[in-house]
Length: 148
Image 1 (tube, rainbow, N blue to C red):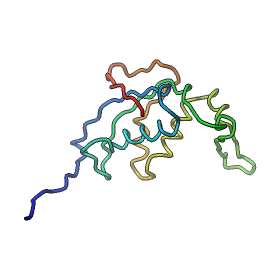
Image 2 (cartoon, rainbow, N blue to C red; image 1 turned 90 degrees about the vertical axis):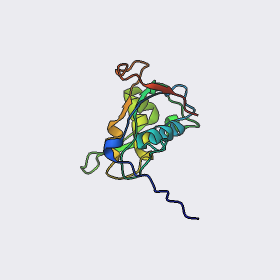
Image 3 (cartoon, helix red, strand yellow; image 1 turned 30 degrees about the vertical axis):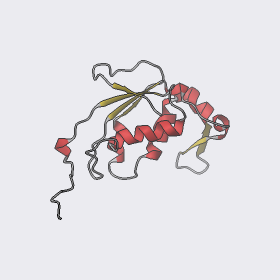
Image 4 (cartoon, rainbow, N blue to C red; image 1 turned 30 degrees about the horizontal axis):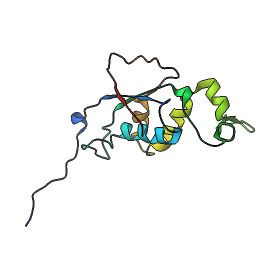
């Protein structure tokens, strides 16, 4: 008994993007929040998911400065950058980064969760992170989603 079912492959013109609003204050932890955001950006939550097509949604994250971390990560988790010159390694703890720019914490966590391929940059462009509860995307009518 043969079935003539064919595998669906989404074309770039068939992509329908929606806007999703996530509150970082109500999310359990940074890692769980980042995986959920990465799922929306890649489009894996949709039945039309196709690995080689960027079919993800726009994600707006509010209250980035109130994201939760467990254990001693506030002091122990370090963020590194290098100027390219000898002795140019700079480091900052999560606590220092939270004071300077809390949105960077979520952006770096989400970027680490996304696949390392040609679609990563375009997916990151669809992520909008805000430190407070106000955002500029009211006109897009983002749908509020709870992170489990």
